[in-house]
Length: 470
Figure 1 (cartoon, rainbow, N blue to C red):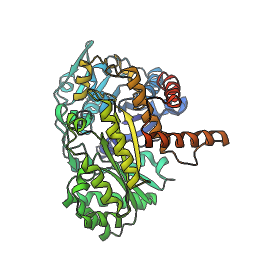
Figure 2: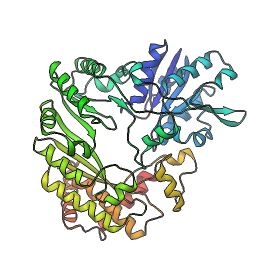
Figure 3: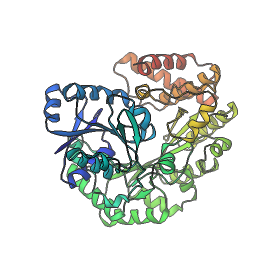
Figure 4: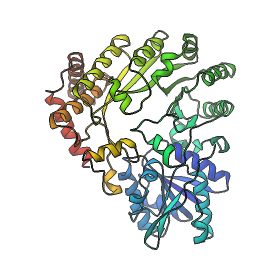
C-alpha cells in the first residue's frame, strides 16, 4: 500500500523523512506530494494511495489547504492525516475542518503505523486504542490517550531519498542529532510538547550520527552540514566525543549548529578551539533579550553576561555567531528594549561579521506565554485556516500601545535590512534602495532611534497587506 505525504515546497521536512523511513521499514511505500504537481501527477499518486499525511508548523496552513482541497476533489474518501507541532497543539481546531480527518499528536511514527493498519482492516474498537490519535467519531471529536515518546535510536535513519531532487544538486544539507529540547522556555512549543504531549529529549548515539553523516556526504557529495537540533551543544563530554569522532573518521565538512550562550560562556578554550578545527563556522544563539527581567520572565535560564562571554570566546577562534532577539513581550518596558539594543551594539563591536536579528514576540499555540497573552486581551485565531500567515516581524499585540508597536516592528525590519547581502537586488534601483535601507538601519541601531522611522513603518504596512492578508 502507498502512503503519500504532502508538503508545500522543496524545503526538506525531518518529520516527513523520519515517517517515510519508518513506514518503508514496515513494508509501506511513501511518496512526496508537492503543491506544484500537475493534476495528472496528483491523480496518479492518489490512485493506489491509502492516506495522505501533512506535517505542519504554525503558519503553514495556507499551502496545506491548497493541496488538501485538490486531493479532496479527486479522492473525496481518502483519509487526510495532519501531524506536527501545530496540529498537536491545536487538535480540536484542526478537526473542525472538512479537510482534516485525523490528527496525530506528538511523536508520529508508531501512531501513524497503527492508524494505517486500521485503514487496511477497519476496526472502530482498535482505532480507539491507538495512542496519540485524535479523530472524528459520529460528528464528535475524540482524543485517545497520549502516547509516551520512544527513544529515537530505535527508529531508522532519515529517508533523504524522499527529497532526492533537492539534495542531488546541493553542496550542503541539514541534519538533526536529537529531538526535542531539555529546556522549558515559556514562549516555545517544545516545552509544551514535553509538558502535555508525551515528548522527551532524546539524542542519537554518536555512532549513529557518524554513520548517517558518512552516508549523506558520500551519497550527495556534500561540503557542509547544518545541524538543526533545537540545541546541539548540551553537554561538553558529548561534544568532545563528537570532535574526536569527526577527526578519527577523516571528515572535512564545514558545519553550523544551534546553541545556548551559557554553554559557551562556561566552555573551556581548548574545546572551542577544537570545534573550530573540525570546521564549525557559525553558531545560532537565541538571546531573546538584553534585559535580565525578561529572561527570567520567560524562563530562559541564562544571564545577560553569558552573551558577551560566549561571543568573546568563539570570536577569538574565528567562529561567527548569529544572535536573535525578541521584543514586544508582555510586561516589557522601553528600557528593556534599549538594553537589547545596547547588547546588540556591543555584539557588533566585538564581532562585526556576526549577525544580530530582531523579531516581534508572537504567541504560539500551547505555550505558557499564550495563556499570559490571552489574559491581556489577545484572541488566538479562531479557525485552523486563520493561522495561515503566522510570522515574527509585524505581529500586532493588544498589550502594546500603537507607538510601542511601531517601535518594535521598526526594529525587526531594520535588523532585517542591516544583515542583507550587499549584492541583493534584481536591478540597479532595488540595489540602491536596499543599500540605503541597510545604511539607514545601521545608523538607527548606532543611535537607538526607532520611535520615528517612517520608512520601516511603510515597509511593515506593505508587508501586512501583501503577505499577511494574502
